[in-house]
Image (spheres, rainbow, N blue to C red):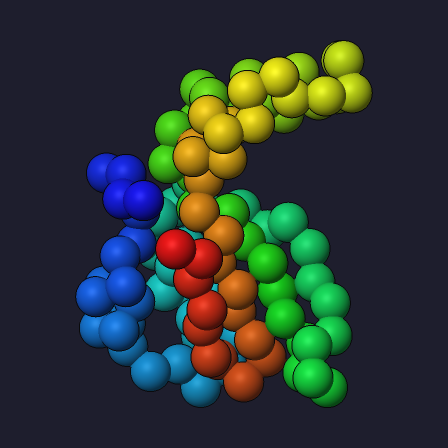
Length: 99
């Protein structure tokens, strides 16, 4: 699925090389500003992975978040999930983007 604003596989392949999580985070924050938000971290194969959402449609994203908080569910999950793209940044600077 390609939605305007999503990072394509071609764009992912053309990303600069990052030496660390912090270096990659600065690059993404400079490019996407407040639309690049932290969602959590966990260890994957002995390397810390930091999860971020690149918000593609803030109105839909926030409506889904509000619905989840108030009702405990998101009624249009497909629409909600198309409002963001997950970006994983590892401590070594490697990147994985959900497509």
